[in-house]
Each structure stands twice: as structure tokens, then as C-alpha cells.
Image (cartoon, rainbow, N blue to C red; front, side, top):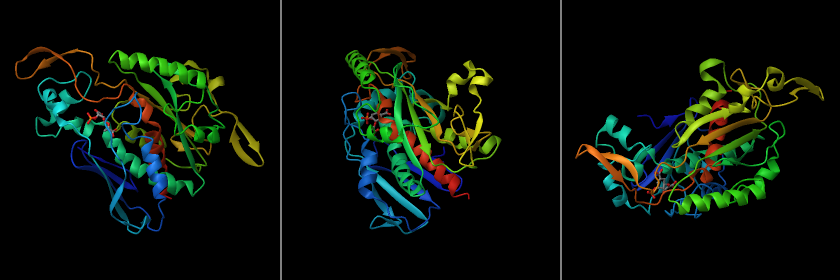
Length: 359
Ligand SMILES: C=C(O[C@@H]1CC(C(=O)O)=C[C@@H](OP(=O)(O)O)[C@H]1O)C(=O)O
């Protein structure tokens, strides 16, 4: 079971949703960087639970603490260790799931693989809570690469089938995206936001859940990050993305729509502007042949509807060896996708920093 990623900047997530804390080790980071602690906390609050009626009611402070490698917010070692304390956990809500697994959650596959030894309270390593330390590391990575002129912003592109405004992949409106980052529903189009609220009220009222797509943009990314084939820029993004609970797909640029296009529509033709090679469009999302081309890097993360819903569902009892109805207790997100923009930004930032450590 690996909780680690990164080739040059080796990052390891540890802990579990209902243990006393969760955290992250960042190894082979460059000492000297001054972390803007307030900015890091604000970034992490965008993901934190208990902030909206459309997400989980669990309330956590989610303030990062540095155990090692950081003094007065300055990185002073090659390895840093940060933690986030867990406070508001109700493990009793998970007791019945040891015998009766949740459909489409990891209870069953975890049991097949690890038996009853793995701490599955709060869904253990399969919990969305493990994205808190990812954002701790990602928030730091984002600050480091910002100083190198790389900007990253994410938005909710689609919630439960309701699509936000289409925006340019070539010249993404980064200032506009920056302004929506602290919204409860981080979309640009206010009319669509109202429609999403109606949908979410319906989903919540009916004890159900809904998924969504988070789209993330990075500008100022140097040309030449990534290699062909198995260590492509996309491969490292995908490696992290599929480690995030509930991610079902990751797609670059026009991604999942590209197969419907003709080559003449999808090709990004070249032009020379002020002596610099640019592309006229950015259907590729800034990565061709696994290598960044200097245009904005854009990818979508597709999240399934939260598996833990309160409606009665068909499952089975391991003890009794027969089918059984399951009613899940606990405080689950009617739409976990709402909390994902800082997660997508973290994946982008950590991957770029990992490649930059290469150079
Ligand atoms: C705590 C977080 O999200 C949790 C993710 C989660 C799950 O099953 O993934 C289930 C809930 O946990 P609990 O049952 O302990 O309340 C969420 O609250 C968080 O994101 O910080």
C-alpha cells in the first residue's frame, strides 16, 4: 500500500480520518522558502469540511502544524513534516459497515485485500479526509511556484450535469477565476449557480448525492516539462489524481470531447507572436507528446457522486451470508465535488514542482 508520490519531490501522506491526526512528509524540498502561513490556511479552508449545507456536517479546524523542517514559517530542512489534527469524528457511525459494506465504497474491496486489520473508521485511507494533507503540501507547492510566475486556478465546470460557462483554454480568465475561489459553489455563471442550488436542494432532500467536474488551469508553465510515454506530464498528473477518493477520470484540454472532433478542428495550429512560437488554440491543454508546450496547462477531474448516501440500499451481511438492506449513518457530502478546486490545484502544483526539481 503506497501513500507516496513524486520522483524528485517525494511526498508521503499518512494517518487516517478517525485517528488523532493526518499529515504529510515532503522530502527533498529546497530549504529557504518562507511559507505565507495565513495564505496556506485560507487555501486549506476552501477544502475543509463543515462549511456548506451541501457538504459534510463534520467540522474540523484544519490548521496545519509543522512538526519538523519549518521554523517561524521558513523551510529550514530538506524534509518537512506537517500535520492536521482530527477532532470531530464519530466512529460509531462506521461500526455496521464492517459487516454490511457500502455499495460503491471501498468497504468490500478493502476487506478482500486487508481483512479486518485496516482501520476503516471514517473510511480509513479511502476517506476524502486524506485530501487535507494533500492540500497542505499542495498549498506550499503552489506558493513556491507562484514565485516563479506560475499561476494556478480551478473552478467547478459541471455539477450533476449542469455546465458552467465555456471559457478559453488558450487564454483562461485567471483574474476572474481568482475571484470565485472562495465561493460556496465555485462557478463563473450566476444563472448556472442558481440552477445548481436547486439541484443540490433536491439531492440533499432526497438523501442522495451528485458528482461533478473540476477544471484546473496553470499559466506560466515552462515549456519542456515531461517525457514521452511513461513519464509524461499527464502520467504524473494521473498518478496523483487517481489517488484522490471518488475520482473516476482525468482528461486534458478538450479531453473527453476530443474524439468527437475532426483533426482539422482539434489540431492546435502554430503562429509566431512577437517572435515567439504560440498555438492559435489549446485543445491539447498545454501538453503534447507528454511534454508541456508553454500554453496554459488545463485538465479536468471527474468525480463520481458520493457513494455514502442515506437512502436504503441493497447490500449483504458477511456474518449472516445473506443479502441485507443497508442504511448508512453519518455526515456525508451530498456533493463532494464542491470541495475539490483546491485539491485539483494541489495536484497541478505538486506535479509542476516535482518536474521543476528535475531541471
Ligand atoms: C472529514 C472530511 O470528509 C469526510 C469524508 C468522508 C468519506 O467517506 O470520504 C466521510 C465523512 O467523514 P465522517 O463520516 O468522519 O464525517 C466526511 O466528513 C474531510 O474532507 O475533511
